[in-house]
Length: 416
Image (tube, rainbow, N blue to C red; front, side, top):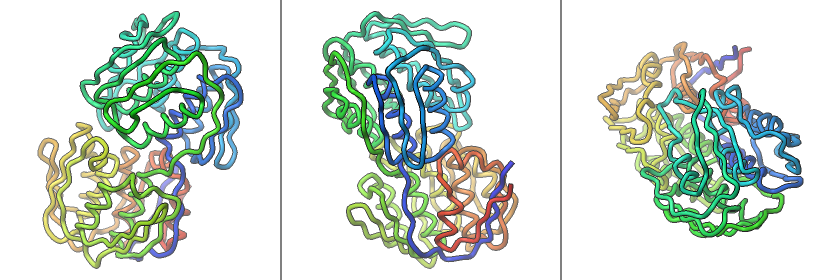
C-alpha cells in the first residue's frame, strides 16, 4: 500500500496547473448514456474514480477508452441496465447512471450505495423524484429497481439541496414528456457544467446554477463533445498549501469565480490573492490569522475544503471555530492532526482550533479523500517528516499530487 513521505518546512514557489473536475466529469460521463453514438469528453482527470465509472459504463455495454485528458464513450448500444454492488461500493457516484438509464431504456437496477466514511448520504430524494415522474420504484436485496415506459415531467421539491440528486433527475428529465421543475436544487458549478453538457446534446434546460431548474423534455439527444471545468477543490487545496508554507505560487487553468467563498476567507487570514480570468497568484502570510468558518451548500464555504482549512488554522495566530453543517462525521482528520501537535477540541458539529506556531511531523493515516489532503497540507508546514498511510484516498481526487507539489519545491515522495 502506497504512502506519502513529506519533509516539511519548504516555502512553495512556482506554477501549477489545475486538472479537470472529477465531480463534474463523472455525471457528464453518465450523461453519455442519453446520446447514442460516440461521446468525447476532454479535460478529464486521470483518477481511479474516472476509471471506475468507465468500467461501469462498459459493463452496461458501452465502448470506453481513456487516454491522457480524454474519455471516449460509444453509447450506441446499451446491453445491460444494472449497476452492480462491486462498482457502487467503491464509488458512490455510480448511482448517477440511475436517471439516464431509466430515461433511455425504461428500466434501471442500481445497488444501494449505503453510507460512507464521512457520513450517510441516502438517495431517497433520487427515488422520490423518479416516482413523481412516473417510475415504479422497488427495493429488493440491496438494489433499487426503477421502471417506466416513459417518464413524465413533474414538479419536484428537494427537502435539502442534493448535488447528485439534482444531477440524476435533471438527466432523467431531459427525455421525459413535458416540463420538469426542480425546486431547492443544488447550485454547484458541477451541476451547471452537467447542464451545459446536456444542452450541447440538445437538451432544453433553464436555471442551472439557481435553486429552480426547468427542463423541457425532448424526443432525443445527440452524442456530446464537451470540455470539463477545472477542479475548484484542487484549486482550493493549492491555495491553502501556499498559505500554510508562506509561499508564493501561480495557479493556472482554474476558475476563480468558483472559489469566491474560499478566496474571501483566505484573504481574511492574511493570504494575498490576485485573480484573473483563469489564473490565481497566491502569497502566503508569515503566519495566518485565525478565522471562523461554517460549511454551507454552494456558494457558501465548501465542505470539501473544511479539512484543509482546519490544517491551516492549526498553525494560525489565535483560536478559530469550524462548524461542519453538511456531513455529520467529517472530523475524522482531527485525531491525525492532533498526532502532529494540533490543539483541536470537537463538540458536536463544531471544532475549536487553537493555533500553535509549529506542527511536528508524524506517521498519520488518511481516512477519506479530503482528510488526506489536510494531512498533506499539515505535513508541508510541519517540522520533520510526516508519513501518510492509505493514500489511495487522495488518489481518488487529486491527479499526481506529489508531482505537482514537487514542482513547487515541496520535499514529497511516494513510497510504494
